[in-house]
Amino acid sequence: MKGKGANFWLQVALFNLAVVAILGVLLRYKIAFSFPLIHQKHLLHGHSHFAFSAWVGQMIMTLLGYTLKERNLDHGRFEFTSLLAWNTIVAFLMLFAFVYQGYGPISIFFSTLSTAINFLYCFRVWSFLHQSPSHSTGDYYIKASIIFNILSSLGTIFLAYLMSNKINHPEKYLASVYYYLHFQYNGYFIFSCLGLFAYFLDQIGVNVAHSRRVFWLFAGSLAPAYLLSIMWAKLPLLVYVLLVGAASIQFLAWFYWLYQVSKVRSQIKQGIPAIVSFLWILVALAASLKFILQLLSIIPSLSEYAFGFRPVVIAYLHLVLLGVVSLFLLGFALWKEYIHFNGMLKLALGIFIGGVFFNEFILMLQGMSFLNLVQIPFSNETLFGIAIMMFLGALGIFLSQRVKKYN
Image (cartoon, rainbow, N blue to C red):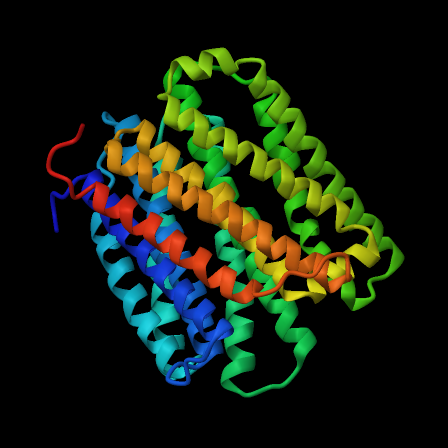
């Protein structure tokens, strides 16, 4: 695989996205109908771990690796493609292990190996940035994303300890899961995207005012924002004040940064194709909704509802993973021309984005039905159909890159 270019590794990641989507179809089928051959929780663990490592992780590693390589052509050699290969191989082995046994010796081994590969990549990135003569705001975001990625692993280590030793403690289980998700989603994933966007701004020569200040606001408030996920633990008043402050800072920092970006939007639009502009507008809307919901969760009754009702949690996680992170990474890959734009890709993106939207909409209605505000018949069957829609979109995105002639 040595010598393969960015488009090849992006195709690998896009294939992995299609696998994530078909796993989602199987999960939705089992909920709506019956599939006794597969254990629901085992499949769910495999789905989530594979999505993180083989889709989002692979995309971040690929896009960041090639971006750093291009930004620092005169500064040493940055070798990372072998890690991309091993990351995918181990991710598939981990997926099979989770589907077979859930949390057990084999799955924990491959999960640990996957984490080790990711850490090795992060170590190489950190060393490369440390030796680099440039000091972009993007470097700050990427280094912070590495720190948060490492911190997130503490959650999985504790979770693996609980599961492997069959310790039945629901509160510790939830706290470790939400700890991992918080530092992955809001730390590693979001900060990686912001870092790549900062590199994009550098390349097109656009300066967004107070970017460094916004970085410190985001970075400083991220750790205490985890407390939003465990408000059910009856936190002391001072801790509650801390989490309210963290949520407020993140909310204000996001919209202040978005305002500063909007002031240079005409310059940004000149540097990107229309499809990238469209995708990133959707990302901005989804991210804005994310920070609004995050701020609203400081209200105890709303937090109890949000974290106590599964469809609401799933909707929020998919909003961030698909609506924010995945669409941004696809847009960045299109801007770099690592992904070739053609008619098939345009159609597939439309199907995929439509699936994401309808998925969020139905999950929202399910959440409202819990409050007896609305009743929707056949919601699980509908979500199964939407999962098929997202799979067809993801498969189409991958196949569009296999077309020999781009038009």
